[in-house]
Length: 59
Image 1: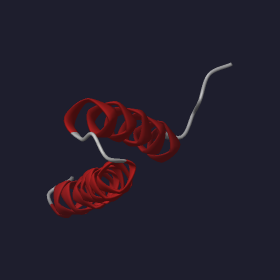
Image 2: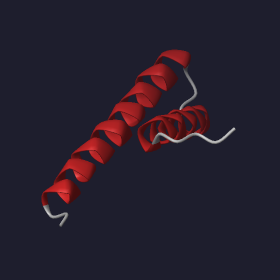
Image 3: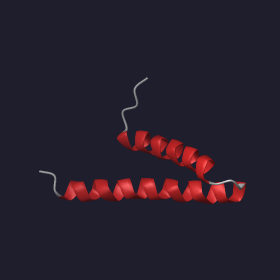
Image 4: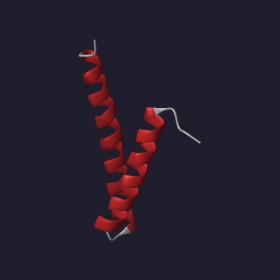
């Protein structure tokens, strides 16, 4: 099955990366949840902002 939505693919990627990094970098469960959620939001919002910025310069 091919996923045709780049946004959905990016969200899955951000979720998996933030999950792995939070497990690797933090030891307490509360810290893992906070760190993972923060990373996820930074990646998704950053990618949306960058995509919007690139759209301004598209021909």
